Length: 166
Length: 159
Image 1 (cartoon, chains in turn red, blue):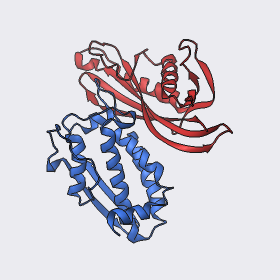
Image 2 (tube, rainbow over the protein chains, first blue to last red):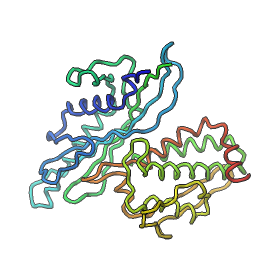
Image 3 (cartoon, each protein chain N blue to C red):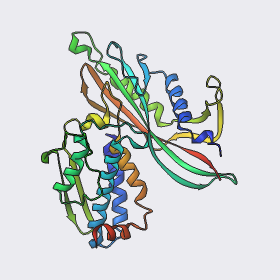
Image 4 (cartoon, chains in turn red, cyan):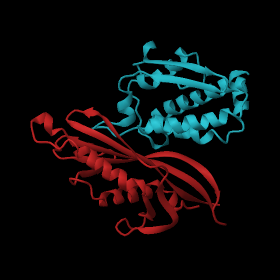
């Protein structure tokens, strides 16, 4: 039996990443995804978006054809801003906070329809009954400085119902 | 931290669950849940369930087992260091203990490996692992609806 589009984490990942990409963040930081960590020559601020699989649980009968699986994933947005003050430049101390606040604001009411990217990645189609939403308000915390980078981490848990054919 | 937030939610649900148990069972129940969290985090560090694998020397993972052993917790069933992971955790890499009385019990398990926060929260060159956070969420999901917990405890601890 074919796997339903809502049960593909790859679809959720593509949908979430493409959504975050459209957000207007203060200062226009570069947005990169997951293990794209090669930022050693990066001078301006950047944000790394990671979607980490979390728990799954049977959520019961959905329709006559499908059981529902409560599927969850952690969305983690790491904000990196180079500490200009340490390099003797005029530096906005609050720049990391501004970006983190933008992310927090957008994630607080995050709700997007899952899209199926399998057939045509350029023209994904909406998947019915599969809304990706936040579970709790996001957390927005500072992490210790890492090399030249001042860090903030904004994260929240996302959930959606994956359909499993019966 | 998100982890603190998860811990608070976890504690609240544990408290609610424990209030349904007799005090003499509460100690074993809390130990069982601490064991489950540690078992989950050790397993997830191996790169299971789509999480990044963070085993190089095996010290971080081994420290969880050391902590449990130092605290007198059950360690049977926890993953052991595998062949090739030479950097076994030292006895100072972890500690654990139980506190409280009646149904107000707290299990504390501490991993003292200095790079543990980097593995959990990530760095500029490494994405976050979130092994502990996912472990907490996984165990929390099972707290309110695990009617077999007393049976499992009886088997595991002979009580």
